[in-house]
Length: 264
Ligand code: HEC
Image (cartoon, rainbow, N blue to C red; front, side, top):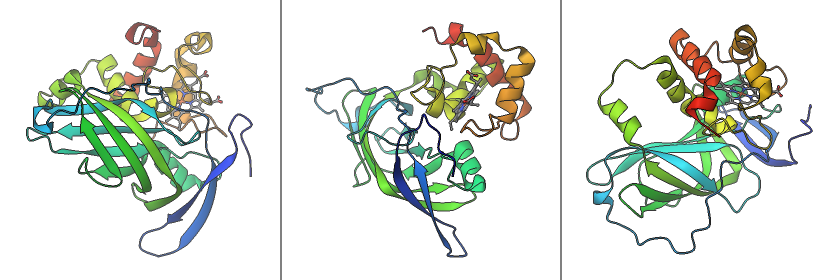
C-alpha cells in the first residue's frame, strides 16, 4: 500500500457495495489536508428570506467549512425554481491510492454523488439568506458512483456550504449558445478540475496551484500530455478519455490563459 507523504493520516474507511452482486468490499483511504476556501466567520447571518424570493436558476457553491479537519474534496450545485424548490447534486471526491483503480477512476471523473431534492431534511438542510445567497448544512453518509453503485462513508461528510446564484451560468443554461474555447474550458474546469485545483486554479494543500511558473513553463505538448494522460501514482486523473476533443481543447486553452481569466 503506497502512502503519499503529503497526505495526512488514514481516517476514513468506506464500504463500497457493488450493486447487483451484493458483494461488500471494505476499503480504506487517506483523507487529504486539502480544503476549499473556508467560509469567513459570519456570527450574525442576515435573517432568512422566503425561498420563493430566491433567484431562479443555477446556484453554485462558493465556500465550505467543516468541524472535521480532514475530508475529501467536495462541491455542490443546485437549481432553484420559482417556488423556491431545489434540486441539485453534492459531489464528493474520495481519491486515494487504496481505492481499486476501477472505482477510483470513476470517482475522479464523475465524483461520488448525492442527489439534493430538498433543503429540509436531515442530510441536507439549508436556508436562503438573500435573493442570491444560501447556506446549506450537509451530513452525508452515502453517495453514488456512476456505473459502480452506492458508497457508504463511515466517516460522514459533515459541514456547511455557502452557495450563490450564478447569473452567467443560468443564462447559458437557459439560452444555450456556441461557447468560445475558454468559456467551454471554464465550464469543464468548474465541473471536473475545481474540486481538486480550487475554483480558480489556486490549488489546495495537497494539490498544486496551476498559477505557477512550472505550469506556465510547460510546452503545449507537455501540458497536453499531463492533462490527457494524468500523472501516474498521483490522484491527477487522465482526462483524454473523459472529455470530448472540444472540451479537452477548451480546458487546455483555459489553463494556458488562467492568469488572465482568474487573476490572483
Ligand atoms: C482528484 C484530484 C484532481 C483532479 C480532479 C484534477 N487534478 Fe490536476 N492534479 C492533481 C494532482 C494531485 C496533481 C499533481 C501531480 C503531481 O504530483 O505531479 C495535478 C497536476 C496537474 C497539472 C500539472 C501541475 C504541475 O505543477 O505540474 C495540471 C496542468 C493539471 N493537474 C490540470 C488539471 C486539469 C485541467 C484538471 C481538470 C480537467 C485536473 N487537473 C483535475 C489532482 C487533480
